Amino acid sequence: MRLYAQTPARRTSQLIGDVAVLGWCVVWILVARAVHGLVEQLAGPGRTLEGAGRDLSSSMREASGVVGDVPVAGDALQAPFDLAGDVGTRIQNAGLAQQDAVSTLAVWLAIVLAAIPITWALWRWVPARLTWMREATAAQAMIDDVELFAVRALAHRPLRELATLGPAPAAAWKAGDPTATAALARLELASLGLRLPGGLQLPADPRLP
Image 1 (cartoon, rainbow, N blue to C red):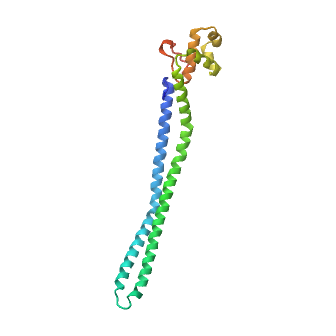
Image 2: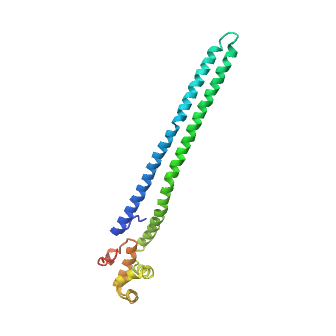
Image 3: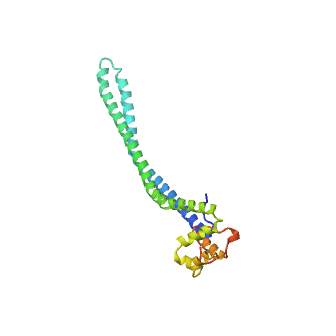
């Protein structure tokens, strides 16, 4: 599988594009992490509430145990402390629930914030890169078939590009002119950022990529 073009201009463009997409993804991952950290700070009150509830519950349970040892009235005295301990437990659970809600919000917000721009960039860039890789790999496997690429150039290349090869490139190819055939093949391969094999390479034309 060919990853990059042979011609410097096309290869540089591909490298810049790959680096730009990678950088874009990294930036949004860092932004998502920062947002996650900021949202997680909202869990602070929940942690405070959890701690207060836990301390209240623990204190009331201990007090309940102490007054429970009082003769005769111990059971009656325990009831308010047990009730206060239950209130502390509910407060602790409310703090935990708030922390869980904030944590869930932080995770999903970070995922969505990173996923949307990253998906957009990959959707714009990856299909084109994969298409080029498949085409370039297939072309490389048939690189010696100069006639094939000459025909493709006549069928696919814009007239303004064909005009750079002379007034009648199709007629020259049909007449069996090897120079015209190689020039057409070179034009088609240049559109993929590839070059003809060394034995068929023509002098560089500054008007072509």
